[in-house]
Length: 444
Image: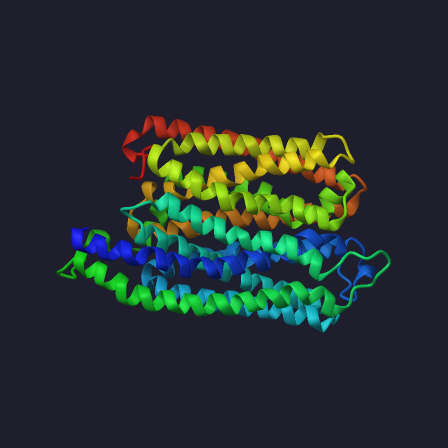
């Protein structure tokens, strides 16, 4: 990039990032709005909605259905073929529309409410994932020659504030009351707040599209004044096969699915796990698990800066996976009824939740060419969602089947983390054997 283009680019990049984080904040909030009040679904008689744990687990798993069955792959290809502005707008709109269907289903209380919410969350999930892919691809473009890991860390941190907001706000919107049957309106309060956030996200996405159309296009022209593109830079569908044949893609994909499943699936049932394990009220459980996203607000950008300046990304991946493993060992085997162990586990899990993504996502542009970057991100999200769909459903079934469900679920998460450590070690060995990829090199 020539000097004039770089100067102009940097002046707008941070504003673009500010617009991009809001739709992701709304997405994370809506996805986790029931996590700290999941106890509502332990008994169908607690709500007029009438869902049980298995039903809630089915609802939560619906997020990944369209993603797994081809939606993410198609969406990623569309990002590379049509560009972020067109494809991203389609899927941000789908995200908001799916959330609207979920809200409508929660308020209806009809016998088909679970089916309608399941359909809504499927569209919300696909829209969210492709929107997230579009955001990540946009950051990779705007910060290609700058602090990419820092920018991705900031985006991740602010998005996860949406999770923290949901975890803390939901118990206040739906207060825990013994013997109370929660009305449809009470149960739907978190979703109503989520729709307000979606509306704001749509507005700022439109602002980003306008900015990217004007500023992004000017930068592209300065980088390539002739406007010509070589055949080597053109996207072809056979490039997807090349990505699938890339060993490093599969290592990152496996690490992603194992690591994120141990945290995201855990958050979905955090209340149902932490409350009986440590004998705490729902509000305390909400604050306890909110340590995860709150910690990333501080540490994800810091670790992103560390990766940018010091490199050694594969080492941070290994360390983050180990910390997550220790956290779930605490949750599974620490003495029951002692909240200290729950808080300590959240500290370890929070550090891991910041370390691994700070190193993982900036590694993706290093293993594939730019022309298939959107497809590659989408394929990694596809692998991730395949696991999330399965493990959320399994967690709901395990919690609903036995009194020892929380410990049983935690044993599943321990196994996932142990496998994540093994994959991270394999990726570190790949980095040592292939220094030309610069996986452990600093980004600036």
